[in-house]
Every structure is written in C-alpha cells, then in structure tokens.
Image (cartoon, rainbow, N blue to C red; front, top):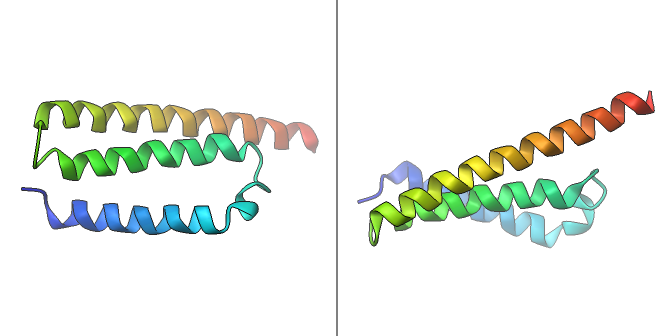
Length: 91
C-alpha cells in the first residue's frame, strides 16, 4: 500500500505537468527548456512508479523509480551547469 504523501506528490506533479503543457510557450523562453522539462518528466515518471510499485511488480517499479530520479537529477544538474555557465559568460 502506498502512503498518502506519495499520492499527493503524484497528484501535485501531474498538476504542474498540466500547467507546463498548457503554458508551454512560457517554458520555451527559458534557456535549454527542453532539458529542464525532460528532467521534470523523469521525476514525474518516478512519482508514478512510486505509486504503482505498491500494486504490481514492486521490484521492477522500485528500480524504475530510482533510475528516473537519478536520471532526472543528472538532467537537472546539466541544465543548471549549461544555463548558469551561459549567464556568467553573458555578463
């Protein structure tokens, strides 16, 4: 059985994802926006896997959860490095 906080995180994450889809033009104004959105998408997959793992294939979905968290973190790190490196060079 999943915990309430896991379901709340997933629902909140889906709400933010819906906002990203609806207002995607705003996100294209951010530097390297595709990498940032991909990072968020990986975290979202992790949140889905967290909830699903309590129902079916717990080992598989636990692996998916942690792999997507790691990949999302790496993508976010790369986005930060590229973005802030560019802004430092611009000044």
